Length: 174
Image 1 (cartoon, one colour):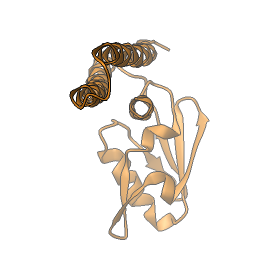
Image 2: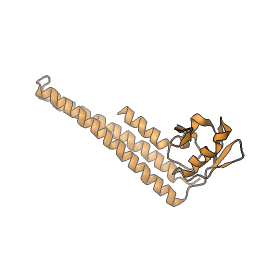
Image 3: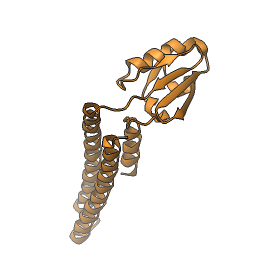
Image 4: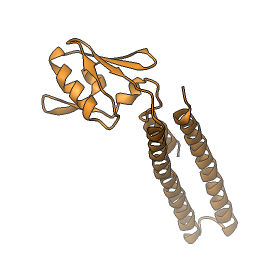
């Protein structure tokens, strides 16, 4: 369940909030001599100011490919380069775009809730199997199911709290 929350945090870091963050470009892959590679493997990423990202490629000949990969991503960014460095201005989010990002966030959250419920189901199946094999009593079975449910509820509450704070961050006007 900890891994599910960790994955949720990782997924949420890719959602734009109007502030520049190097994590924003983590999902973008650039064709580097036939191999799709993450941008952070091809250059140095910087956030010189809150609304600007810069990418300084290690290999200057890759500048066009990196710029194209950023432009064609679903992030809605428009990079520009000066031959040595790529500047990516982060435009303020429109109300419509904010609502789309919140919908995307809720979809990601639901996927992770399902993952938590699947873990609960697997744990409950294990407890039932132990009862069936007469390795535990019915009281222990009931207690085990209750503990698994309490644990699941606490993780879903943590997930909901994380999603709520990210949603607030997205909808916050700067």
